[in-house]
Length: 386
Image (cartoon, rainbow, N blue to C red; front, side, top):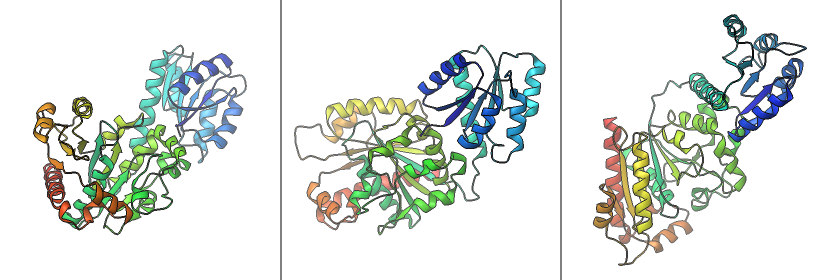
């Protein structure tokens, strides 16, 4: 669910045009055409931000702001004054009564949108209470293409990290509406992420996130995504997702997050929480090309330099037609940290027994155990360096 913005203006054309513009930006819009209506709706709608005109016939924007700031229920709502009154003294009065920002009409839509986005993001980060616990390491696992086993790698990496470190490791499945871990591990109806939408981002606490974690016999704790399509609604709720990731960082020294194939609009912002990335691919030529593009895109976000990237080649089919690991490495222009061999029968048995693959006892698993060991060692070395 997108952040809710209330637009207050006695000019119906302004309400319509600004409302349409902000809706296209992904916000949920409610509107009021008078000061009195704005005060009433602020209590019932509790928007994240109010875009407030000053010159209105009943109660002007200054008085609306005073009343909202004096009420505990509405005191923390962000208020952006949006008015044709552009004198310095007008702006000073606006800030004195409690406005968070002041924009003069006419304002270019891109500027208005940028102010709103920056204010929501900045204030959210300022208001999120940072727990007293030290911040942990977050490992993002992702792929350039679906169906290459990124979720399997993420889950089994988390289990192996827990076994090696004997520490509290959290595995978070950020695949809203497309969860797979719950089904594979025998959870009939995983709670999913959508439940967080009933709260404001600022109200999501570490305790709340901790209560949603599911303990697993493998030793890790899980934040599961639902399999129900309606959970996809949270993919546009950037601030909710940012808050969840922020709180996870203080609930464990190691957090492994399955981002899948970056399926939602705000994945770029969410990846910023990660300290390092694991990119999973198979040896198919199309996947190799797309993975190379993904690596270049991640480099623009700081991965590969300040934030390490580990490449994992997951061979899921037994065939001699696909490139070898050395050919894949040459085409990527980057070294592979781990190369997993195909064990489809064992993977099926793991699913039947609701057990992470890495815990299955079999000679056919020995090579992959060694490879997961290499990946785990690399992750831990990178964590110690940061």
